[in-house]
Length: 223
Image (cartoon, rainbow, N blue to C red; front, side, top):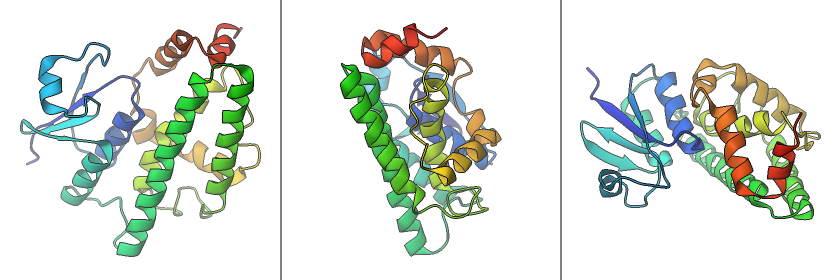
């Protein structure tokens, strides 16, 4: 019998999606409570020292930070998403952090104040994905046929580009064919497709417009 799991989330947070993917891969039910990060309730601040989502309540005990939550779930619930070999686990954890660095680059992209700054960020992302291209196996997933924790980390990364490309294709994956193949494999996986809010596309577009950045102009100019 599993304990009661309650995931405190925000409807656009990619790190929340990581945790939701891990839950789905392990076929474990959980409750999801969305909060407004612009107006954080007092009860949330008491359980989240960093004031960020996700936070996971396990029978009312809280753990925070997505990587910590995902590792806890993988240690306590089968099937394991990490490989058994310690060296390979360490390698995959490193690439999960690389995924987090790409999320930071995406944040810099949608906050870029000018078109020139925007394309600096586009080139940065293109370079990061070309770097990733060099380490990918033959697919369909990061390490071959087996879906793992790195895949859970990158599903939310690629979801941003599904939205971006609906109004502007920046050619980020132009020189990364293996990454493109991996992206499509993750998009087709049920755990990944269901991890985001059902209105994710519209919510993200509205968020981007509110940034009043260079990218906001592209959103507003879409047909």
